[in-house]
Length: 168
Image 1: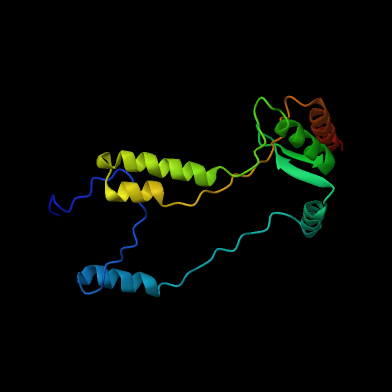
Image 2: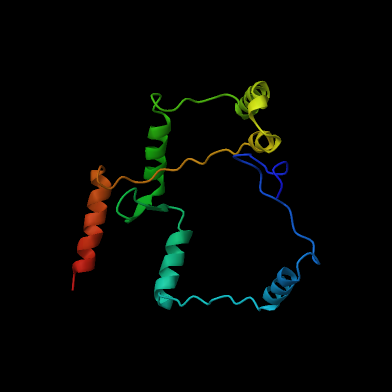
């Protein structure tokens, strides 16, 4: 590859380039061979009994509870939905960390970003500019992970479940 064709971009959008056939016989043969292989999907062995599967589905379908993974330790927590919503709202209403906004600032932020990139475009390649400018902002999702080590109510629930499991 000549130096004039070398792209020095640090970031760029994903390539859509597909080499045309007939350029390299070995590559064509390889592509033809692997496209003929059947696609095998592995069947996962079920590790739950039918009763356990039914119980799990029943828990998933129960709108009165929320099932979450704890923030540490990999524990699974089952909480009352109203309790969970109350705790999440407490977090969101903490004005030290969250502020309610009246309109979505994404368009204004993207416009400011494009202006900044335009002002400094001599430092960037065309592909870097395209990568930095051509995107649609995505809204984030908010969710809470239970902190087992900080919530007495949740700790007691987990402890009582563990003690039930130890019973003969």
